[in-house]
Image (cartoon, rainbow, N blue to C red; front, side, top):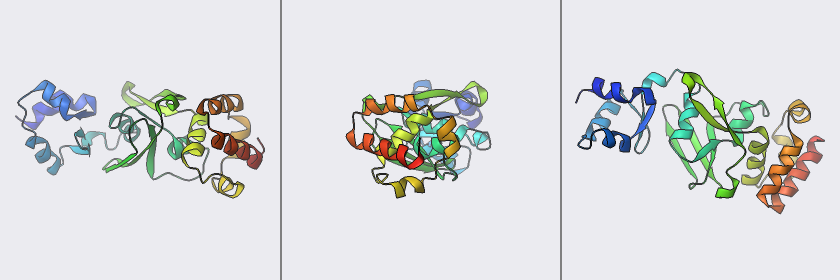
Length: 205
């Protein structure tokens, strides 16, 4: 099989799995994938997941692949907070929340980290439009902040919360406090309730 024939079949997907390849051609030689990766025709995202280098310089695809290569998941934590301008630093890793086990991957598109939560906490995200009529699952600002406080228990004193350097204008003007408290109640976590109370005191919100 030629690579051009293969690419014509899959390039519009942006990324694909080995299972999709076998569904298309059950007798496909998997060695082709390794050979095409070594030649730079394909990029290996993680075991069994591949993408085309054509998408390297297209906006948002690194985030899109975060959703696709470890599902179910949505982008949250530091990546979402940086996206909304709630923290000042650029974020090296693309951080997500999942019901699967905690994991991390690195590929040509970036470094990816996934934090595990129970299924009842997979809420508070929305579909954000991106290029090519695709969408990305992204935590709301309120849920991203709660995920952070819940999954990183060292944010349990004013000093650590101040070190986050949350944007005070955003907290005062854009953060939906009613939604934050409503979402917080759904966690049913006294430790999280304590950190939210401490956050409100630290940033006077």
